[in-house]
Amino acid sequence: MTTTFYRTESRKILFAVLIALLLPFQSETNLLSAQTAALPVLRVSFDGKFKKNMPAYLNGMMQLTDVDGSVIELPAIFKTRGATASNYMMKPSFNMKLRTADYSEEVDTTLLGLRSCSSWILDGMAIDRICMRNRVCFDIWNEFSRLPYKTQYDGRYGTIGQFVEVYINDNYYGIYCLNDRINRKLLDLKKTKEETDGSVQIRGVLYKSGTSDINPQEKPGYNEDLTACVVSWHNAWELTYPDEYACLEAWEPLQEAFANGKNAEYVKKYFYLENLADYQILIMALSIGDNWGNKNHYFSIRNASKDIDDPDPAEADKRRIVLIPWDLDTSLGGRYDGGYYDGNYSAWTLKSITSNALYPISAVIGDDEYKAILKKRWIEGRRGAFSVESVKAKLEKYRDLFLESGAWQRMVNYFDSSKKSKPKYVNDLAREIELIEQWYEARFREMDEYFGIKNFKSVVTMPDSQEEAINATYYDLMGRGYKEIPKSGVYIYNGYKVRIEK
Image (cartoon, rainbow, N blue to C red; front, side):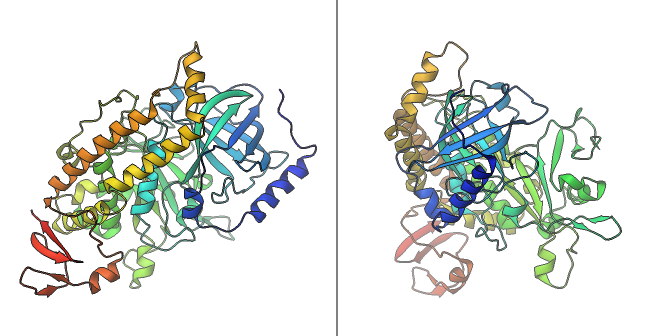
């Protein structure tokens, strides 16, 4: 093995800390837009090799070289991840957790300008032929939707990431995306409280839908250590937080939610309707097939010990549930096995999506209040994060990064020459991106048609906040002003005539 490391473990830790401290302060948005036409290189090394369904992490080292030549090197542990991804070991996705020299403790470190974490995801994107769908969709989500409460990360509740080229034990594996995680710190969930008598009070909780940690999944129940639960037929969940305090009490909010699954009033009380609408818009507009059933999303609660009927709305809100997307690679016309490409893309209709909604959206999808919010959010999204121009810009930014850095051609050459099984990819990335953009233009028109929107100019500047919307004035064709966007008809806003039809 030819990789060179620092002489002492203490120097590695010191170097990592210095790098984190010396990084100039920038917002997450500025850092993400600053990735230049070159990719950082991540080398990981460990004894042994990755295997499907690994039972334990492997001790090793990571060495990350940024495009400016700066290097950070730390002990780390590694393990393959993902149910579908585990079938593509020629380009494995894996978890990387940074550790101290003896591997006994976590080390929070800033990597590539992303938030300081100890646990990272290296997404191999083995079934995504353009290696960017998950990243593009989360970029859209982060631009479009924010948590209904303030956090130190400006309410962000999607992952952020940077593309890198990866070597595993000195073997080249191509383009990966280094992502942060959906976790307690990002969502500002209240830590579990340890009482003086040795008991614990469960407060913040985070549940992940879809897990193989419990089988069979035909009947409700828990696994032995209470870290996984089947709430109904093939509806299995993982206790992401607090997994170290797994107990029946931690599962009570989830069990209660599903016990009231068909109750629209319960959902309107315990969930945030705008959050649910944002999630539905994401699935509809980008045709994300793997995130509409019993997998690939989270439920989070800031503090499950709070009373939803607390007279202080701020305290009651801490008991409400947030729906969070996860693993968005079956999107933008793609398929779970990479089978849709070269102009052949998903034909999943909007009608089919809305007629098979996941819980809790299924309980309110026919509710007039929810439908009004859903339409409003599409009107807001179509001029911003979901506009054709915005989606194209994100696809083309990463296309140019891959091509101008030479990383795409290096990866294609490597896998083209390989005699082993290969991941899914296309040789002509520029053509594939162009075809996906055409698919999205058609999908955008379908969305407008679904919501009855005609002659709506994409350059209309709608209010940027609820406060601005309340204070804005809309005019009918007689010049009469009013304060709310109408449900149908023609009105004037910001100098443009807008037609909304039922």
